[in-house]
Length: 78
Image (tube, rainbow, N blue to C red; front, side):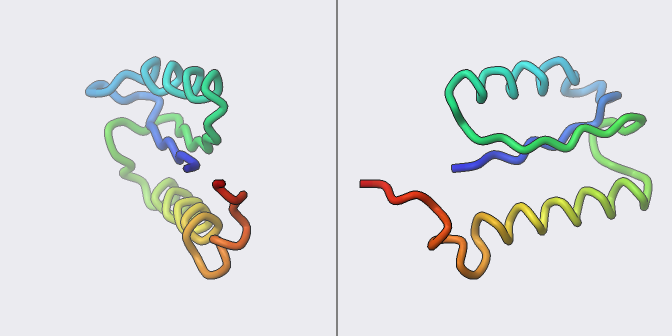
């Protein structure tokens, strides 16, 4: 199952280095991972511009992976 990792680069609660390490490990395991890393954001996004980007990309990701016709796009598991 694809992963969408979203992180503010100035996050003090969950350091950005952790997000980068997670991406590295997902790639080692051949897990598909999409990222949205945003400068000047912390633990949560606060500017309208960054929230619009977040929700636009999130909707695109969900539409691609669980939206109408998504099941037909996925490789068979068998």
